[in-house]
Amino acid sequence: MGIIKRVAIAGSKKATHSQPVSEQINRTSTIEVTVRLRRKKSIEDKLAAGEVLSHDSYEKSYGAAQQDIKKVEAFANSFHLSVVEADLARRSVVLTGTIADMESAFGVKLGSSTDRDGNAIRVREGEIFVPASLKGIVEGVFGLDNRPIARPMFKAFPFDNTTLTAANVIASYSADQIAKFYGFPGGFDGEGQTIAILELGGGYRTNDLTNYFNGLGIKAPSIKTVSVDNGVNTPSTPTSADLEVMLDIEVAGAVAPGAKIIVYFAPNTDQGFLDAITTAIHDKVNKPSVLSISWGSAEINWTDQTKVSMNEAFKAASLLGVTVCVAAGDAGSADLATDGLVHVNFPASSPYVLSCGGTSLYVKENTIVSEVVWHESDTSASGGGVSEFFPLPSYQAGANVPPSINSRFVGRGVPDVAGSADRFTGYKVLVDGIPTVVGGTSAVAPLYAGLVARINQQKGKPAGFINPTLYANPSLARDITLGNNNTTINNVGYSAGPGWDACTGLGVINKF
Image (tube, rainbow, N blue to C red; front, side, top):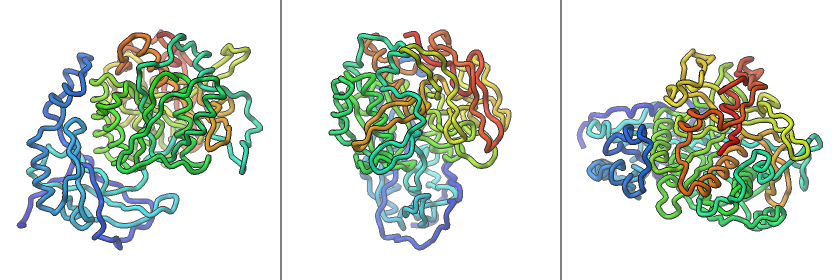
């Protein structure tokens, strides 16, 4: 084949895995990777203009170029790799081949290890390389390493074998009750809208959903699944990711029962997460107008290529009129990092999503008595802070976002809005036949997704990327001014106060 001049893909460097790595791996086994390509041209001018495009118009103007796909196909063939799929809108080419051929093609060395739960995984360290002829064409390669990357953002009480152990629950509510407390627009149920929900594990049982919505006296919404990268609906036990799946569906469905709900199941890897996002956003069949994501991890845990590629996907969502609601984190200012520093959660830190923080909501006789920052402990508190990767977006220029406590970099402030997340006054859900009470910002993302579906129905058009409107009109939210998200791990954090803050953002949206 001769000597090929190679270049490293910017931001592809992968950190050392925390568990021992063995070079003993079956290099004849076959794997798939997703190669992300550049756009035909920049979309920045369109984004600045706030325009909304059809799926076909977007693909034609801002998808991948056919000649770039042909170059990737030729590269793949030269290394005995096969093209499984090439999608212009998603700017993705899926390749399959043996591990040995993948190593040769991308200049990497793969090894075997285990994840934190003891499951066998495939890992890489260092950078990914492509031929110099593909420099600037290939923006990222995902799937060589399949270690789990994200966690669900729910907080539940411990279970025994049959019932919830939650003696300290103060009160619990269904999401439709919380929507009433918050004054979500009445007379609308999301009819005509489609809510996409992204899941990286777990599953749901149709019988549970039927029983749950019957118990609320609400007609169960239309629900169907889409498999991404062989991810499937796999319900197991109430202590698994089933709790996240059921929470998301039951909250969004209770707030907007007239909407269709599409659940995109994908593996918990950077490839699976990215592919689920791009599949949902560019789904020409179901055409979601809202996307709810309750999975994430500290910003430092992601490669730069993953953060960039996901953020670019969220830009596409903005142009397509899709509102993306993301849980801001469930572990305070540290976000489970143990380096003594503060960290925001990603993808909540993307400037193109509605980042959803958490509050503790207290209600008496159906009236809100008080609402403060949700803060139970180091591992149960609203995420929030200042990104050290994404710069301050223009819509936050007047929000008085402080410098990051770590670096003094003034980046994207997290979150944008907030809602009830305290499990002690949490959401009633039914999971694997067991009724329980759940909290976490995992509940806030689908809560706002349901609200957006109602607003879309009310206005007769998609709200799309709503952040600029919210920050230009902060009176659309009820300010939360008490509490903080400090953790004892780092002894620092952020406090709520008048105006935007890095615990609850602008507050709770209460004008529509």
